[in-house]
Image (tube, rainbow, N blue to C red):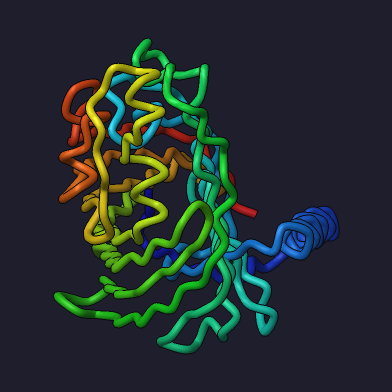
Length: 279
């Protein structure tokens, strides 16, 4: 799941108190990025920000049952040291200058487990798939004033590995700001290799015996496509509300898996809300 690209610049401290608070926040984020090796890209709002909330989405890929996950979004600019973007349970670090039309760097994302915690009694009988930290990299190219003054567009490619490898084509569009409201849209198409598809969508003889689902072998190819909309509404100079509405649909062998066809759904809506604060 992705939010529109949002850029920020460092605030001008109005007092010693504000300067100390801002320096502390930047130091903590620098430490966090160094420890986790995560990072991000974005272009748009006037200052660094962090939003924390919750998002409703399927329990696992193809699930018909829903769960609630953390919805964390943020953008932190470290000048020549790059910039960090947080998005849900993923993060990217842009190693290039904010002045460049290009952005590139490492990324990390957490894929949730499919285990005894799922609701579906048949899927619960399948062998457990542990939660996985997926590590990879991204590259992105951005343009400003595409359809009108004040908007922006970015196209990119992501690659990540965990239980198999995924490659994603991404696009991020930000509309011109309208008063206190900033709207954006994003879209992506995900491709996965045999290992990823077999881990999450295949049913081998053992899992068939466990669950009663038919044997099925999922192969590599296009896995899913998604479209999302994000809105940021300024409550005042420091605080904001962030809303997220997304739709994703499994494709190809992922969609045809009996885990999805018999026990789940190929299409899924996600809905999130967070409260954000600018530093």
